[in-house]
Length: 305
Ligand code: BDR
Image: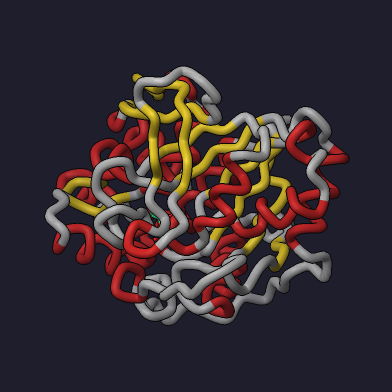
């Protein structure tokens, strides 16, 4: 059996590809849903539909927080389409979410797989922060937390803040100070190494598999948006993070650093990195990754059925 993971997701476009990769590369114990990208019910439906489509109907979906711990946020339909999947009018999923709440499921699984469970957090960190607040000893049981979030030089939501940290900066702060073994894949790194350029997109478009069709439909709006922001193709922060979690050798450069989160006014959600002091380091920050290995692995999975 593979490594045991939970994927925490605000399911829209690239989150679905992260779900696909985690179902193929790990033993995916469940997907937990949290407020973020688009309206909550669409996120839930996107997740249920994706799992069914990928042949993973047995993977449980747990409903988590419907809002950040504090403050207001806005959804980003301009990035993912109104329903989060490029407005693809897909069939109604038959699968339904579990009755158990996401926070309770995270805590239960951390006990069942004590020292083994890894969390792939590709969304605002509300669920994990709430799990920690309910039972701080979770930090000693979870083996590793991979976080897609934060920006150290250019935010994608405000000049300072990346979306996931901006939606719930208090949660990000709680998780970073909790004592988990954390690796962060920041926005800038995903913009550089997680891009599906036009040539690769065309390969996927002409592949003719069920999964390649899914990829194109679910990520069409994301691609248009990414290109409008000056990228050479669609940016895939969530699936890159899942891939790096699986294949650590694809992390080309990372540093152990002190990371703090700004929770005030105009810089709210900003990631403050202390690049010089070695004291109180609380996260490994990925700085360079192997984008080609990520793209090759994605193409291979998309061609499988
Ligand atoms: C992050 O925000 C979301 O829109 C993406 O799914 C990703 O998790 C990028 O800032």
